Image 1 (cartoon, rainbow, N blue to C red):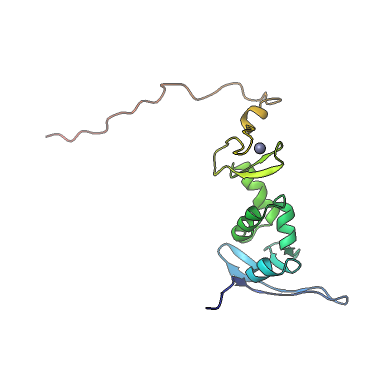
Image 2: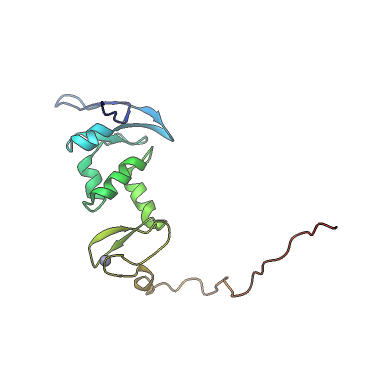
Length: 155
Ligand SMILES: [Zn+2]
């Protein structure tokens, strides 16, 4: 069976005389170039061009953005559909999709909820306490919200 790679648009690398020729196509959210074969098999070829920039990204670029960790580079490549990979990676950290453990020097998966490093137990919550003095009042009160019975059907 022939393997089918994801391919969105075309990209012709530039020469000394002229720049690359980028032909974008629509994919999920925006107009981009994306080439699964280039990503998987040709580390030095451009495999992604975002919608708003003509800067091409190679597998190597994705690897560098993801701390050289292939799993995360693959996840990032799969996920981007219009934005710059940098932006997408920033979002993962902001929304607790990924955490970075300074002890292990590795990214780890948090799946949306801040949690400790699965390898060494380093905890981002404890580490992030210092210097955070803004906003003194906390809304969460124990027992503040009680489950209430809804409308009862008369009978
Ligand atoms: Zn760790």
